[in-house]
Length: 115
Image 1 (cartoon, rainbow, N blue to C red):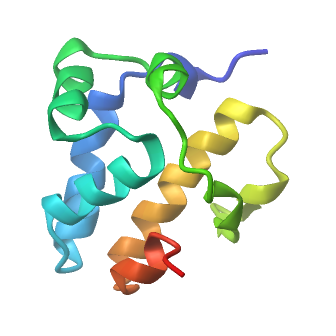
Image 2: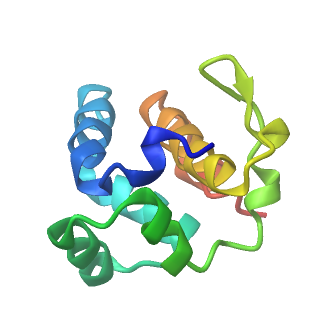
């Protein structure tokens, strides 16, 4: 069974990410830094995906995930990201978790799992 979020466009959720982080005093540039760390997409590539209405499924299929994603742990909506079985849903939850951490004021080096 495919979850509805898989066929949802990233562009339809992206403004919510921006609103969430900006409401907490963070910037869109910091959000882009987090997305680039996770997916490997630079500013231009991200803009292309947003403009093209890329689905989450295709967005993560095209991404090169950061090798340190296994360091992303904790809960999103009461679900531990490391325990999500579906690989695509886990990747979406990784993004949600990083956005949450950014919005909560966590230092960028911690959000990006820097050594």
